[in-house]
Image (cartoon, rainbow, N blue to C red; front, side):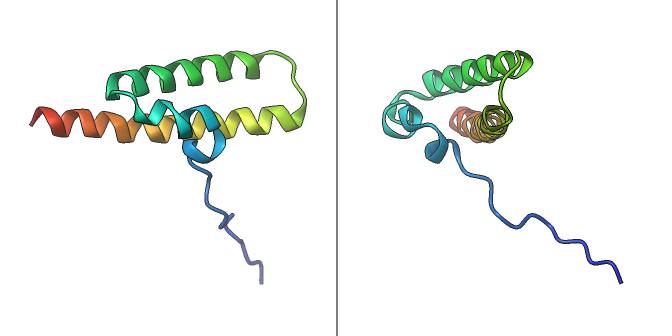
Length: 83
């Protein structure tokens, strides 16, 4: 019987991956946090498109995923504040 194991390790949050975000940006107004996450995704995608070592590409992919998750959370906060 073939057993398929899910990768059970949780993906790290942006706070864990990006020291600047975790220590400073997260204390800024929501719009600045959103802008930072958007720029982080854009720059990480750009660097992924360049030739980079596998170690770096893994970290960039983690950053993109964590920033995307954080962006969704921030957008939901903005929309709940408007309600």
